[in-house]
Length: 407
Image 1 (cartoon, rainbow, N blue to C red):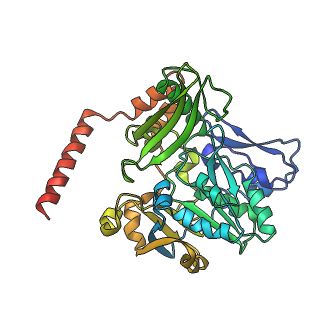
Image 2 (cartoon, one colour):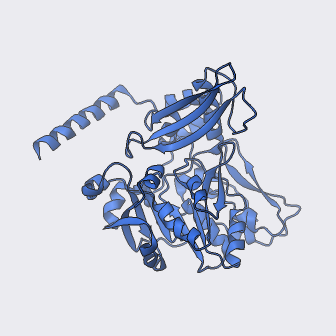
Image 3 (cartoon, rainbow, N blue to C red):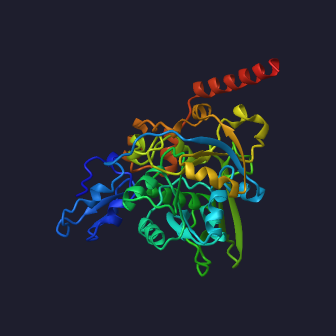
């Protein structure tokens, strides 16, 4: 049976829970806000299926992509609404058109991140854009398997470890399955995300009580209307976190409050990029180097301004790494513009493809401090010293002078 002795040995994919024939495994949240499997030993028949589907215990071989493209969706509106170039939507649209089903991560009514599926093009919008929180997979593997067995085409998107979990769960290959993962830095804690929303809504609204969900009849409370982790108003490279709130004015009307902060200012993104509250398994990822078995890996094309400057308009360019030869022939059906690039060139700027993030002592400090507010903890642990700020500023000046005199 599954027995998690070290938390780094569980990626939280939920494959064990969904494959258990006795339904005796539950996912329980720990004090860091992450889900882990818990076995009811009295019900367990020790069949071993939970261990057989675990992507941490059963890791696949390392691979490299067959071909790599820079890509952007032909529809500029879709591209603008996407984290980078809109590659996911371009790949998902033909699946819907063929009567298929698309699985992805979206916000639920409480602004937690969950996995769900859609059978319509309109439903794809909920899956667009990055969500820097680990999603609850629920019964998505079971649902995907049910669709596959009826012969319907299924696109399943998720983190590399979620795709690895799906592959182990299915126990066989399906010709009608298309799997898409993305370049993953690591997944932040859902518990920390909930705490951030609670503190941020109160801070933005002068300490008023707030709710995270959508109910229309709760007019006395602050209500979150929209969240974007990757707002492009300042450009793709300087993306912002945007939070839209509805705030009562005391006279029965509502005012809209928009928080828009660049990634180096937003407190949640600062903590995420400083690796303060990633899942322990992210520091020893079992699915790096394309071990997930995905057909396609997508992500931001960081470094495009140096490798293909002529296509960089700061609106977002996707990396599309094709890992399965059957996918290459599908590109003619995608509403996408693409440019062939070299894998080793893009790896220099996108090191998360192959390397897990290092475990920092600041992570332990973050979770050990239970007295300070989230804002104070993150601010303290991500504060940049004066010496570092001066060094960065001098590097910026020297870099621009070098460019000016070497044109």
